[in-house]
Length: 422
Ligand code: HEM
Figure 1 (cartoon, protein in one colour):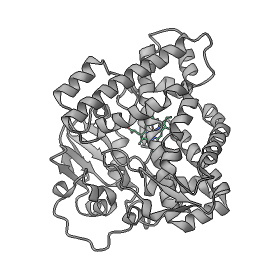
Figure 2 (cartoon, protein in one colour):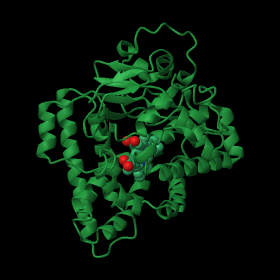
Figure 3 (cartoon, protein in one colour):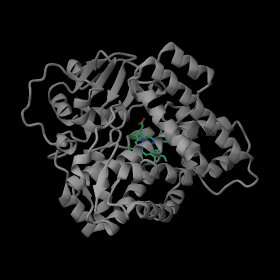
Figure 4 (cartoon, helix red, strand yellow):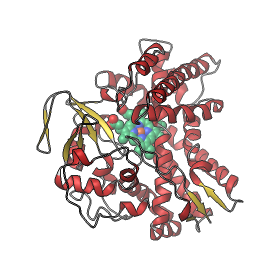
């Protein structure tokens, strides 16, 4: 079962070479990935995986070093799908002119230029203003299912909730919400999944639709008579009608990025938080008794059971990482989830401990120049969800026999269904 899988692997099997043993799309591995990475950290912390054509890095110190060195490790690889797309799927994307400028896929100087306007609009004031709205929304969702006998927290809340918060934050018309949710799922598997030719073409069409929708949404808000008092309005004010500062297409590119990064991840964080806290019942009981423990508990979930499992870079020159020579142009897969379990960084790492002092040093939101811009919003959302559940549903329990498998991809990990009763 899923959480037991986070326990230390006891019967340590001999390691025959991580490159051949790593089966990223295999359900058995994905249902229980942590013992594999414990073994890799100890025996082969950096290895080459020929099938993926990636150098896989597993230790905290090495991953942090890579994230801290954008001059050597480029983010432009994130423009590409993890498993190379077919010529037909690539053609669909080209013809649809899907070429958004985004912070996460660019290096300096482009990255700096694009991140500046988001920083301008992503100020703490805007995030803090969200707290009361988020709290109201959490209670509305709870009200919708509390009369039932049991609920699937993913379907009944976590799937849509972060997107609704994001739309409110960005200032987007809610009518696009379910379409964006659907298109995001498709975009995720196009970029990080392992698809057939037919699936690739379908998902490539979905990416074209997503890009067109982003452009239309920006135009709709830009054409409105009053510039709204929200994130999107802030970007329009920053641009001040001058394409040289920021064009409408640039804003659409930023939105195309945010409309993906800003909810899938939080959906999985909320799912992982409840899955972990309800399994580790002592921790749930503690946060119900004292909600001031919640912020550190959220960080501990980010360390122990993070939503972003892998991330990527490309080496711009030949470089030695953990004693292994990664060649110029080498693709690098960072096993972010493994970094949180690194025994050299976190004492007794397989223990879920909401009082852990250095848990905030996890790399779950990245590190350095590309550090997650939405981290304050994601933290706020999950904190408020937990506060309201602790208040209204302290007897919440997992319905153990209704735990479903997790969809395998090379990006995020979280429960696809999470049945609870109270
Ligand atoms: C639990 C939720 C989240 C997790 C785990 C997460 C994780 C990450 C990670 C690991 C990065 C670093 C990427 C890199 O180094 O290349 C990142 C970047 C980013 N995240 Fe998040 N994120 C979350 C929520 C959000 C939200 C809610 C938003 C927006 C509202 C957001 C917007 C961004 C943006 C714009 C970047 C790119 C920053 C840059 O390249 O300069 N994220 N995120």
